[in-house]
Amino acid sequence: MQYLTACVLAAFASYIGAWYLGNIEGNFALLLFLATFVTGLYWLAERFYFLPRRRAAAARLEAQAEQRRKTLAGLDGGEAVSEEMVQAARNRLLAQPWWLDWTAGLFPVIAAVFLLRSFLYEPFKIPSGSMIPTLLVGDLILVNKYHYGIRLPVINTKITDGAPVARGDVMVFRFPPRPSQDYIKRVIGLPGDEVAYANKRLTINGQVVPTTESPEFFDEDAMRYFKQYGEILGAPTQPKAHRLIVDTNRRGGFAEAEIGNYPFREACRYSEEGVRCTVPAGHYFVMGDNRDNSLDSRYWGFVPDENIVGKAFMIWMNFGDFKRIGFFD
Image (cartoon, rainbow, N blue to C red):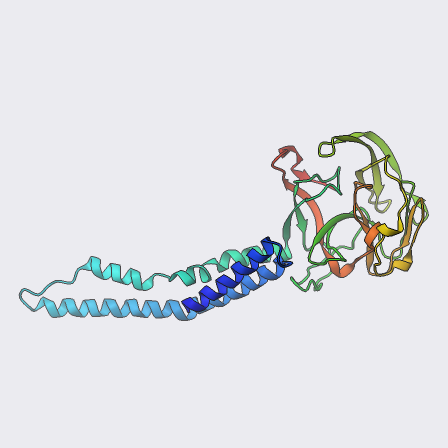
């Protein structure tokens, strides 16, 4: 078993190494599922096979030592059996071998991480500035995995209903052109909505989304000030206010070369002023809060419902600025 286990661990290490070096496109959910499954098999084997065998061997050793004591007790000059020696031998028999330490011994931790990450909360790190000023590069956030309904890991199939996706939600999803990559954007349009973004103004179903001018935002990475606005999305009974920034030096329209050939491309019309889309059934239109520095639905299309990962709701750490810890909308 130790040779088989060495091969299994080497396979996991090779996969992680190739992923780290960029030789393959890794899938962490799949890797964690396989690690849980494999270590679970070893844990069951340890509990119901290997451990009982080691305990039986230790019991036989103690029985033999006791028999030897009784035999030597009646003989003059017989060498007594050392209790310390018996105890040391018993501990060696009961000790878990290294290949079980690295499999069955890790199962409870791996299983807890798998369950927590798959069904409750998943941590993410913000890698880009597309959600500035709501989320900054380096923010460590938590994503609620059950808010929109529980989904099976790896295959992402929904098994329970949750809250419906709402305009204004900050949502994590699998990037449609590259599903192995996770993206985070704000939900702008729901199925059936007509969304227009022209001349840097957002319109939903013919209604201009209200905004209020705020003090300029200084982006430390770009070393520039940007126009900042407060925007209100969501239903009138549950308005969701957030901030956004725009770059007045960037044009509002789109060049043909910037637009991808995505599913339901015919639902969008592009012009020198901007874009107008009708959101298909079962899909969502998303945008970044950094409106002029965000690769979002304006460029690659709509997010299918099956690509949803969860709702982002909290910054749990930013090592450069502890004041950022807290909830956000």
